Image (cartoon, rainbow, N blue to C red; front, side, top):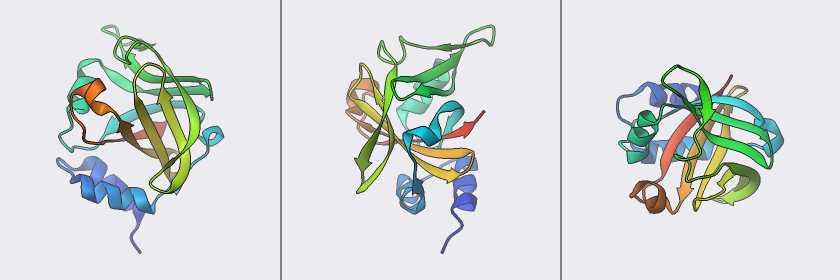
Length: 155
C-alpha cells in the first residue's frame, strides 16, 4: 500500500505530473461530505500543463471559500494591493453551491458552479488538505477538455 500523503506531496512539488498518476492517487483518497469542507481554503494545482493553471495565475487565484452549501466562492483572488475578493467575472459571472455528487463511483462533496457547466469534486488527503478534480464542459470555461487537478489547504 502506498502512502497517499507522501505521494500527494511529491506530486504537488513536481515540475510535471502525469494525470494518470493523479488518477491513481485520487482513487486511494477518501470522499468527504459538504459539512467537512466548510471554511476558507488556499489553493494550488498540479503541474499537468492544463490551461486552467495559466488562467488562474493571471487572475491571482488564492483559493476557495465555502460558507455553506448554497454559499461557495470558487475564485478567491488577490487584487493588486493584495486584498482577497471573490472574482465573479473570472468565475463565469457567478459563484457556486456544494452538493454530494457521484464521481467515478463514489459520492463526495462537489462544488457546482452557478453559471458554468463545471463541477469541482473533492477528496481528503489529510485533516487539512483536499485534492480536487475539475470536471464538466471545460471547453466552455477554458477551451480544453482535459480534467484539471488541484489541491486546497485549510486556512
